[in-house]
Length: 165
Image (cartoon, rainbow, N blue to C red; front, side):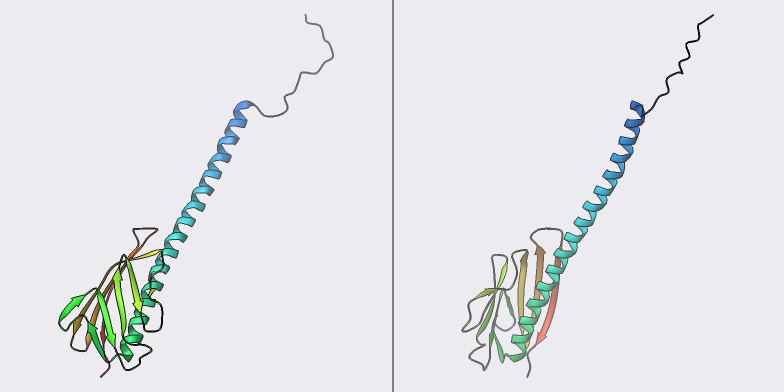
C-alpha cells in the first residue's frame, strides 16, 4: 500500500503549446483580414482620385475651348472641312487672339498672346488623342485622356461647338 505523504497533486497553470499556437493562428487570421480590407480601401481611394483627376482635366479643357470659341470670330486651324491635332482661333481681342491649342507629346498646350504657352493637363494625365474637325462655323473636337498612374482609367469625349454668329 502506498504511503500517504500529505502532498496535493500538482495543478497545471498557464497554457499548453497547442493552445498558444491556436490563439496565435486566430490573431494572425484577424490581422490578415484587417490588412486586406485596409489595402483594398486604399486601392479604391486611388482609383477614385485618378478618375476625379481625369474628369477635372477634361472639364478644364472643355471650359477653355468653350470660352475661347464663344468669343472667336473664326477657326483658322484646321482648314474648312478637314481635321487636325491643332485648333487655331481668331477674334477681335488682341489680348486673347490668335489662340492655339496644340497636341504634342501626350499633352495639350494653349498659346495666347501675352502669356507663356501652358500645358492644360497635369503630369498625372496623358492626352492620348486631340482631334479637331472643322465645318462651317462648327468645330467637332474629340478628346481622349488616360491616367499615367493607373493605365486602366481612361476617358473619352466628343463635343461639337458652334461659333457665335
